[in-house]
Length: 132
Image (tube, rainbow, N blue to C red):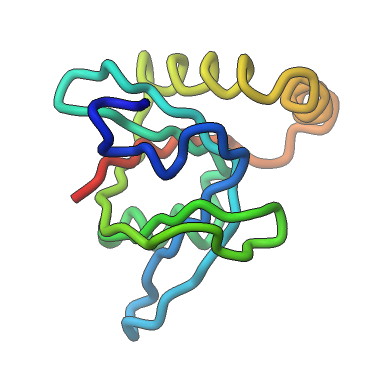
C-alpha cells in the first residue's frame, strides 16, 4: 500500500497514463514509466522522466494540471483516472526520481541511460506528480 491508499491504484504497475492539456484544453495521453515515493514530505509522489523539449514537458510548464491512470505499455487504461498536479523538479528531486526509476526498471533503464551517454541529444528532466 502506498501512503494510506492515496496511490494504491499504481501499486505493482509498470506504466502510468499521463494526460496533459494543450492550450485548447484538449488532453494528450502518454503512457510512461514511473516510480512511487510514498514517504515524501507533502504526501506521496510519482516520478516520471522525459526530455526537456517533449510536448508533455512543455504542457506541464504551462499548467501543472494533469490526470493519471494506471495503464499497460500501449496506454490502455487498467484503472480509474485521478486528477493530479505535476511539476518539473531539479537537483535533489531529479536525483531521487532517477534512483527510484533505476531501481524499478533495472536493467532496461540502465540500457537507456547508456544510449543517452553515447548519443546525447536531449536534456532530460524529472516530473514529480501528486494527487490533486
